[in-house]
Length: 162
Image 1 (cartoon, one colour):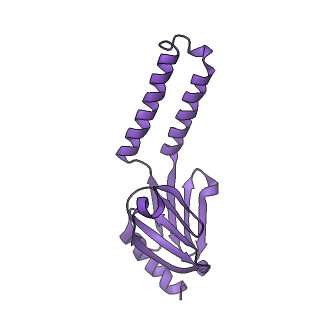
Image 2 (cartoon, rainbow, N blue to C red):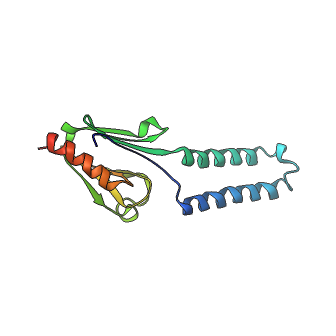
Image 3 (tube, rainbow, N blue to C red):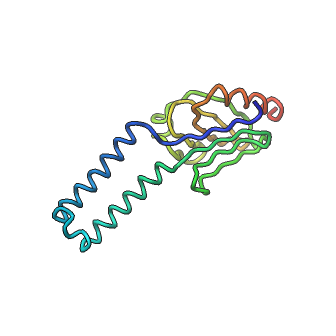
């Protein structure tokens, strides 16, 4: 395997349950505020709340962590947001390896996490590709395919990281 590619999405049952309860609560609140939706057109705040909530929930479902390891280096990004893109050339990396971790205790949760020198992009699970740069900054990319990632990392790391 010369290239590793992985796509992950937020599809955990508990997240879907939380989002369903949230949207249900918003609908229930709007139902009572508008007397059974009878005067919803005159309640701009309710309409805006519904639209805002729906946009947030939709963005969570469209969010996708994409990881690519190839001869150029390693890239991770949360599509469709271009400002959450990270690329490391092999020359920038001091150490790289697959490790087991706890998203809750190490980073506080899943998603775009971390401050200062240690950052992470993760969606679910407890395996990640740990990158330590030449400047001693840490970046972890969650993976659901640790064996495949490790196989490709060994191929490139042995050739480029000394």
